[in-house]
Image (tube, rainbow, N blue to C red):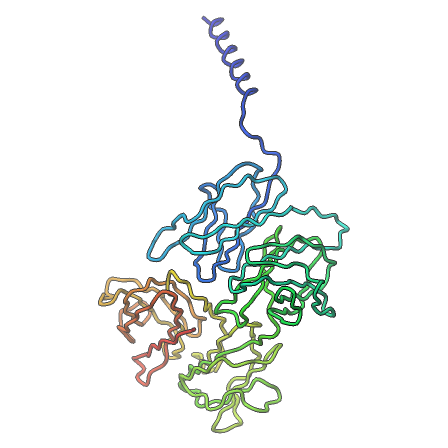
Length: 450
């Protein structure tokens, strides 16, 4: 019996060995690099999947982290949360035979519910330790530029001259890679064949040797002051950086959010010369104001005494975007300026709402956002413990009718509410909680951010 069992085992092993030799399964010989780029200005976040495995997520103007996969055949899928849904929907699929040492960028464009997928393909670069150059490839994903554009990438002393452009691109195209010596460069975009009409001109930006950079053009959104913007991406290590248009200065809006502060003059120079804003009183919200470049001194001067400076700070103002400044009083009686760069980009599948607490007498409150007519007795707050001066917290909401309540922290004691709220798709709204004459009451004021 033992001899027969041994013989059967040997025969089975031989058969398995023969099958293994005859296997036709593909064998990987290397890896390629995969990422996604979102070029739909009003979209929510897209997810990129390899087969059924999620490998990255992308907001507008961003790319997913580079991912390496074997040089085999795959189906790549794109999913997104559509309006009114609670689970993501698969909206696009693309088969791809990944090749070793190739770099692939899936560009997502078109309509959110049925996007187009364009694959930008390049080579993965191997660098030597002594290499002093970097590689740049230019792409075009700005839908509002109907005609082709010329892209220049020059040092700070060289103006754009027709014939020296690095690429001439139509929408959806990508140029050939080019090498540059490590250093600072300016990105300039003009209509094709016209070097006198500037569509974008960036600040100088320094790029290091032995890197592969993808630079793409995008339509400016509500977060941008310029109609055309460009972003760069490190293809190997990940990371994003912006090319800001120097022709569009920074702006700021000022919120007077302290009942005890009084009427203010606001200066943005040192020494003080002419006020940027005069007669700034409680609950005023200014129009966007242009600010000088560099670190900005911001001084609040009492309009009545013209000698008291309750706020005297240096403002952190991001280039080519709008910053909101909120003047509030702390619980210790000090006046401070809270800065915040709001996310203003409309998303067509949802509304977004944010809340700012500026009430010194209630340094922490609970905030409820409930369907219209629903009581809060058995519900938890949407924003528990919203602190005085905490930068606005933005929440996505479905467009329908809501009631908003503000209560004491950990209690159902109402400070205000119900306040009716009926957002629409694409709305971006900020609610500011202001002090009321009655210390047991607060005022909730809706301020559209767009």
